[in-house]
Image (cartoon, rainbow, N blue to C red):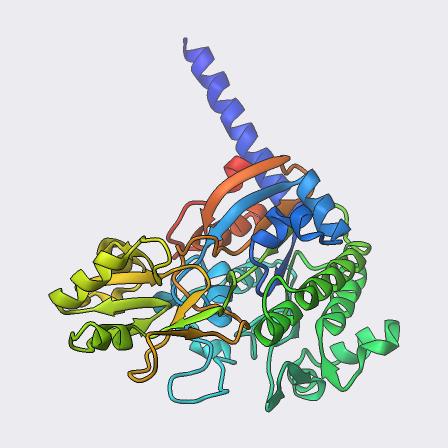
Length: 418
C-alpha cells in the first residue's frame, strides 16, 4: 500500500515537472483585434467573410462562444484586464481618456496598480515584447512599440511619436529587414511588420500585439458593414503574414476587447419619463438606464421586454453592483433593446433615428455583445468553449508561460484547453 502511494506521488511529481518543463519552452503570441465582436467569428459564413487564417485557427484550435467583458467595455481598461486578470477599479485604468482630459489616454505604466503579464514574465527572465499595446509607455519589456499619440486625426496615428518611445534602436532594426515599416502613420500593417521581425529574429517568449483598424472602421461606418468586413479581411491577411514567422512551440491567442452595437435608434429615458408625466430622474451609464425613484422604476419595468419596446430587460441590481460598484445606489437598472442606445439628454424626443455608426462601452452582459477568444497551437484541444469571462484570460496566459498573476480574480482556463 505504501509502495502504491509512493508511486502515485512520484507520478504526480513527474507530471508537474513535465508540465513545468513544457511551460518553460512554450511561447505565447497574443493578438488583440480591437472591436472583434464574437459574431464575426461565429457567423463568418452568414456574413460571407473571407478570413482563411482565422477560419484555420478556429478549425484547429479552441474558440469561445464569447467573452463577457468588464466595466467599462472600452479599449484601454479591457486590454489591461486581459493581461492583469483584475477589473478596472483594481488595475487603475478606468476609462479610455483620463477623467477631465479629453484625448489624454493612460499612456504610462506608472498608472498601473496591478501586476501585468508582461511585467511578471520579464521579472521571471522571459523575453517579452509589446506592439501597440495600451499602457506600455515606459514598460519593462525587451522590445516595445507603445500605443501613443500626440494628436490624432480620425483613426490616423502619427508614426514618429511611437518611434520616439520605442525601445532604442528597434525601429531601425525592423526597417532594415522591412524598409516599408517606416511610414507617416502607424497602422495595422506597421504593427504586423514589427511582429514579423520580432518573431523571426528576437523570438520573444511573450508577444502582445494590438491591431485597431477594425474598431476605427466600425466607429466611422458601422459594425458588420461591407467596409468593416473589408478591414477584417485585410487583418486576417496580416495575421497570416505574422504567423509565417511563428517559432516552433508557440501558442497563438486571438482576443478582443469588446463587442459592437450599431446605433439604429437613440433612446432618451428622461424624455420618456417626461412624456409619462413623471420626474426626469433617469441617468445613463455604461449603456444602462439607472433610476433611483420607485415611480420611474415601475414605468420602465412595465415596458421591459414588450414587443417594439425600447427597453429590453431589467438588469438585476446584484449584477450591477458586482460589475460596477460605482452604480450601487441605483434602485433599478434597465437595458435598451437591440439597436437602441441610451442618451442622457434631457431634451428631445423619447426615441429618434440613430446615425447607424458603431459604438461600444455598453453593459457587458447585453445580448449578442461579446468579445472574442480563440486559442491555437501545440497541445491545444480542438473544439468549442462556452462563454468565458475576460477575467479568465490573464491567468490562462500565465499558465501557458508558467507564471502566475498574483492578483487575478478568476481561475485559469488552461486545464480545459490542453
